[in-house]
Image 1 (spheres, rainbow, N blue to C red):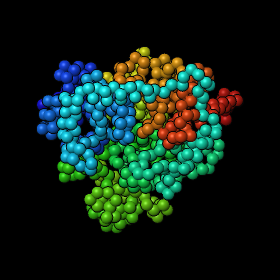
Image 2: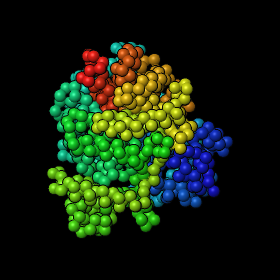
Image 3: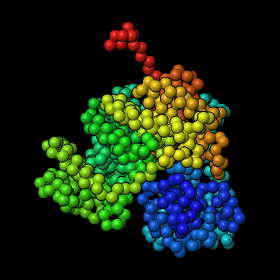
Image 4: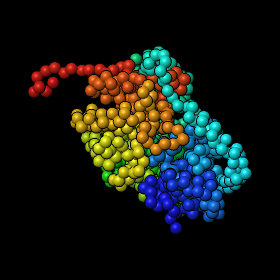
Length: 613
């Protein structure tokens, strides 16, 4: 029998609608129920393409005995982090502060007033690798709630007080906040150089994430200063990723991250935001260098988004799962993408299979589970027979399309669609692909028709052409404005500039404090235990830096000093963070480069009918 989640629109929540757990969606009614029964709340946060979320669901939430215990002693609340990033951000901050790490599924125990007092991520069904079992955690938390209520209240109060003290404010004293100067951007470049992996590209070690926003900064820094070091880091990283397993060598598009430091084995989920950001990076790398590989990857990634993520309504879906049926009824991570030598022979025949194995790095030992290999390009020199390789690639892609496909999270997130619009509009313009510009325009039309109301307010998500219940957060306004501005630049249609201005006026009115600092939620949004506020870039641009970049771009198009000044105040946080944590403020650094370098104005003078004009 279905639970309350059956009435929701989120694909992630619907995945749990048939659990024996008596789930509630995030709602005042859930917390009122916890008060009425005088029991704690179990908050479980995840998303539809999260591998470990699926694992914990199968192990614990589908287990009748575990569900019966939960139903007797907790009010269980399930949240899609992509639908409610504000809820996720507030409690993830508490998890990270308490445990030193975070991740999904996120498991938090709350008082009926929403105050957190115990935290974790994935818990196994049996004690394992130093982790208690989920049942042990449930019993321990229940005992604390029953026998040590004053201690629980004290812990929860301290946590809420600590979170409240973390708000960022420029204050009234001292100099006004300012964007970074050349010396501070130089210090950020130096910090990135120290963390750069000269052997494999990218920054840091395993797991290694595509540093798309940092690469955008480095490209802009090179454009402004001519720094060869900045460009070399971009070229090395983009080359390594394009040849690695993180890039889908058959169908285009990037996986979420590499589990190793050499980009060989990805975590196979594919996210819209990663592909939108990386499409744009490779297009901009082509613009800077003329690289043929950069052109191919930009177009391959754009085509992947349109082919695999576009919804019937014209928007772009959020993600593809990492897991799929391996053909035996068993769901396995990467099953759709990996190959064995025997599978190559079955599709290609002996001779071409030998060529494919050498070209794509497929071995009997394999690079992944059970002797399978992730396709990559280990030979830096490329194929001796490009035509034959292309034939092999197309035949393998056709054969792969017959495998059980990964599930798709088909909700449209406003922010990520904004990033996709910008990427497709620019890529289509650079490479004379009007179909990509048309796809960007269709997605923008959907956002206007479904997500944007007459008062200039955005809905966070939609599905099947209907808006979800969650209000847009700052990243939605910043990224959608960015997409509209890119579309205006490419098409010249003034409606996109006007709509971007409408969104940015909402940012200035509802999300901006008097001192120029920004909040992730509007001033009239649902009140949580604190108003979330995070300027650092993570998997995608933070709302803060996305808004700053869009404000700056809008000011360049219109000459508005009001928007320029707001962008410069917002970039004050980049001044503080750039020399210390440049890897986590990449979009802010890219916006700061734009602030230093422009706007540039070009006057074209000549008779209107002259082709040269």
